[in-house]
Length: 218
Image 1 (spheres, rainbow, N blue to C red):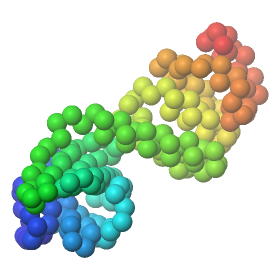
Image 2 (image 1 turned 30 degrees about the vertical axis):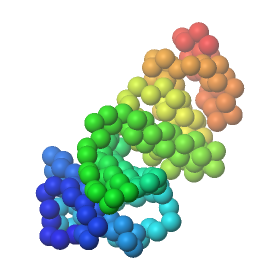
Image 3 (image 1 turned 180 degrees about the horizontal axis):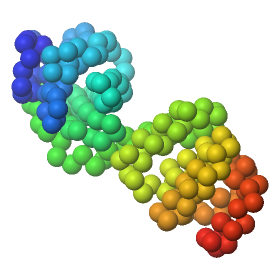
């Protein structure tokens, strides 16, 4: 990447440069189509350096102060090829761009207008991480993953349910009942899981569970 450009560009000699503007920073992603080298800058600070030759999909993360960024890359091969780049800031999609290269070697970069699919894909990743971590009893990682979903979707009933499971496993009854109420208020489906999930056994043993069950007609 030559200098610190303010706009995205691509060619065979200089590689692919994707530029994303936010309220606080400029994120620049540079990729070499020849060597698989990847550089990410926030403003003029290098925050990520790696090389990827074989993977068609990657997800990287980096921090700037207390802000968590994630970078999702997709490469699709056909007569030419295309590279999709999505940037997330604290779980919320900041932007997406696609560079298409046809079989004649012509480069074209365009903004992704509809970002909803990428945002949902990112939320599903966090849900899957949380589910895996919870079943491995890595409660810190599970809580981090479900909270990342709630930061974007504040009424996600499933995340509230599993946050209640985490609280139950940690024997934090007040927090557990609060999360269950949030889940039910948000329209939790499969409400009978509250009566069946092993993770919630501690909450069901508490004296207030009977009144909670009556309150929500479980």
